[in-house]
Length: 288
Image 1 (tube, rainbow, N blue to C red):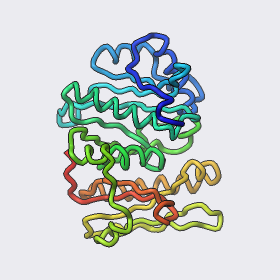
Image 2: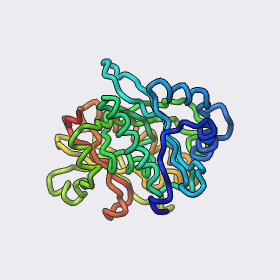
Image 3: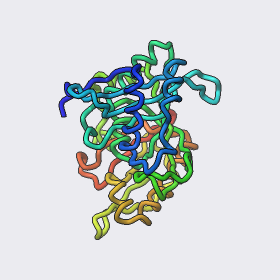
């Protein structure tokens, strides 16, 4: 879909607030209503420093994406914007609407005088990783175990709801570089500069990616971590392998974050001739 086919607006009309309920259900394959953020909360947040955006089909004004965030605090008291949800209905994914909603979010948060936006996402979901890390320039040094407990939607059911918390320092030149078309360093150049693999995988006879043992020690400034490129396929066809990947990546990310490393880039493995996607971690990275 062309970018001209959608519009991103701050929601103000009550009928549009009610459209967010359907978008939430469809975006996350919710099986019931208990996990839906209710309209009255969205209205209240919007009127009190929060932000609710809608992405609309430009021809029908049907909502196809929604974003919800609010003002929060970091543990040390730094005022930030907490971006709680960004959902896109299935047929509009890869349209660019999610990316443009994040750009609008950034513009509005900057108007509030804030410099940090944070949110969580599943580090094994490649499309989210690409948007958050590669395109937007968010970074991550925080891993949370089972944040939401047992989730009942079709995308998350059965696995611990482990999440990355990403930090998007929206005034930083590093972010400006990404948003104005600046590219990440490619895998070949990273390896030529000394980047070291600490975790890789191999394709089994089932054509699924299986993790290899990860290295617990590295003196490299930049390290590389391979993760599956099609995690939902693994979950649907080999649930035990999906659980293995969850616990494998949990252990290694917790270890390397504690050792001072930060996720600074995400590389599409297929485009780099690799069997899985790649996270790039840098030691002592100053993101703020």
